[in-house]
Length: 107
Image (cartoon, rainbow, N blue to C red):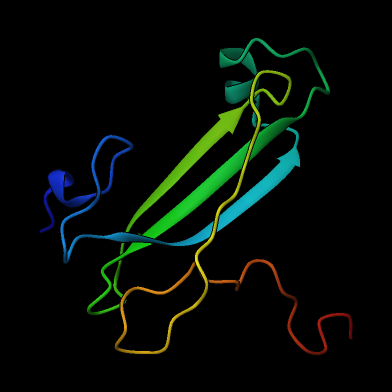
């Protein structure tokens, strides 16, 4: 079990072997009805959905998934990513699996 204190926070970095962000997905679209009510959106108003998955660097095992739905007129979304590093040289950059299509996706 991983302690919540091992995760990174804006005011302090993660523990040395603590979970790291592994992938991020940002999407604009219509929210589920419950989220639309919570955000007090009119019918048909989109939200920005940001999803981040965390893994343990040593094993690559997924440990957490965080999702936030934001009103796009109230937030500015900026994505910063570190360059990918060679194996054994740290945690590397964010995965790009959600940003590239696979071969033959349209067939």
